[in-house]
Image 1: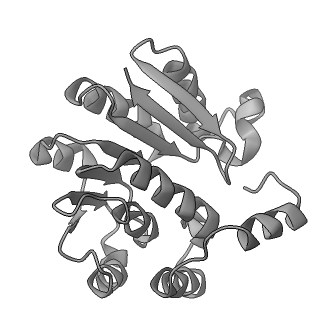
Image 2 (image 1 turned 45 degrees about the vertical axis):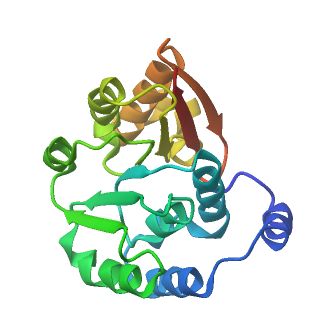
Image 3 (image 1 turned 180 degrees about the vertical axis):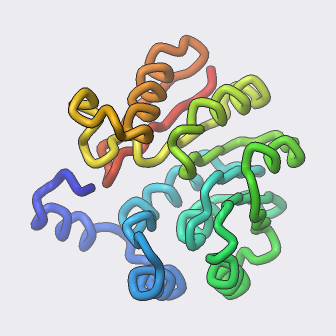
Amino acid sequence: MDFLPEEIETYTALHSQPESVLLAELNRQTWEQVLMPRMLSGHIQGRILSMLSKMIKPKFILEIGTFTGYSALCFAEGLQKDGELHTIDINDELEPLVRTYFNKSDYSQILNYHVGDAREIIKELDKPWDLIFLDADKVSYLDYYEYLLPRVASGTFIIADNVLWSGKVTEPEKYLSDKDLQALVQFNDYVNQDSRVENVLFAVRDGLMVIRKK
């Protein structure tokens, strides 16, 4: 969901670094061929993720929720040269598209794509993550968070996407049957009260919660 007037959104896009040719192609193909294309990070959020990655300079990135691979390609821009990005998605139907664009990119050697249940796969990876991106099943955000936070070092960043859920987080009582919304409200409140971390919620598109372990 976009929260700014359309003209401000346009101005913002025009005054931000453009997408690369590869990302623009993936963006276009996602919107033309994939169901629920709004799940794509897109131009502005993608540039934000890239900038955060470049600021953090991670060696190991974990992404839970690949979709068509756009956000992974953005995060990869900030990886250290000998770094690794591991991205996990349960939807094997998108695997050919994802692998095509990963292979086309400059980061093909450091992108590790896993298809399956993230709950099981993250237990097998066991890396010293510097940056974690949560963008998969919303009802599991808190489970992922509680599993990963004790296993990472101080200074590790966790970024959770879609935490505003089209603005419904301000009135969750109106949508009691929306399990994703209720889970996100619980996650947001839990993180905000967690003394182990620092956090800030960015009202970018559908909301980015940026968390740093103390």
